[in-house]
Length: 77
Image (cartoon, rainbow, N blue to C red):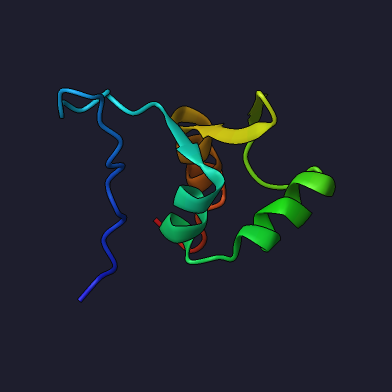
């Protein structure tokens, strides 16, 4: 059975979905089955998707993550 990417689960106080547009480092690591340390190394080496630092916290815009995934597909179409 193929691996299904986890859906973001952040909600606001009322319990409604925020229309999640960013992934935390932990969420991206879980999505790609990598360690958070690997993502840290990639950032230091300027590899991986573009990210933002907000208040000392690293987040990845979902659009950048999806672009990175699309540009790194392997194999024939």
